[in-house]
Length: 212
Image (cartoon, rainbow, N blue to C red):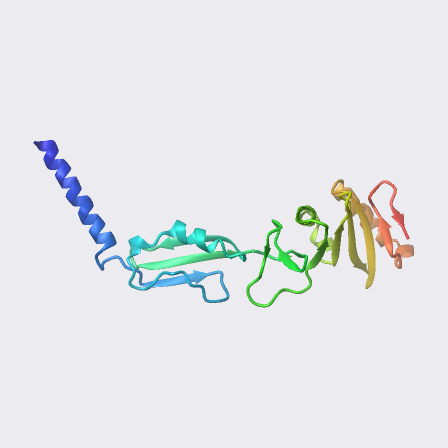
C-alpha cells in the first residue's frame, strides 16, 4: 500500500512539473539574443513561447546548416526566460573557383561584403584545394600575408605567387614537406642584395635553391 502511495505521489509530481514547464505561463521566453551575426537571424523562437519547448540542440543543428556558420550554441535561462544563440562564423582564408573557403576547405558566402585580398587557390579539384588550405595553415603569417596565389600542380607540388620589393615573385615550393627549412632558405635567399630583382626562386630542393 505504501509503495502505491509513493508511486502515485511521484506521478502527481511529474505531471505537475510537466504542466508547469510545458503549459503554464511561469516559464516562457522573455527575449532572444543572437550573438555572432551581423544580420537579423530568424531563430523561430517567439517571445511568450514555452521555454521548455525550445530545443537547444535541434535549433543549433538547424543554424549550423547555414553555410557561413561554423558552429552554434543555444542556451536557455530558466530564471529570466532569456534565450541566447551564439554563432561562430567561418573565417575566410582563400578563394577557390571564385568561392570563399575557410580553413577546412568548406565554401560559403560571407555575411556582408565579400572580403578582399584573399589568397587565390588554383587547383583542378576540391581535394587538391583542401591540401592547399592545409598547407597555408602551416605557413608563418609573414609569408602568408604576402601571398596572392597558390597553385597546386597535378604532381601535388605547390607554386606560390608573392611579392618581393613590390615585384611579383614565383616560389616553386615543391611538396608539403620540410616547410620550416624551406622557409629559412627562402628568407636567406631573398635577403641577399644580388637577389633584389629575381623573378623566381625554387626551394623544392632546399639544400640547393635556384634563383632566376
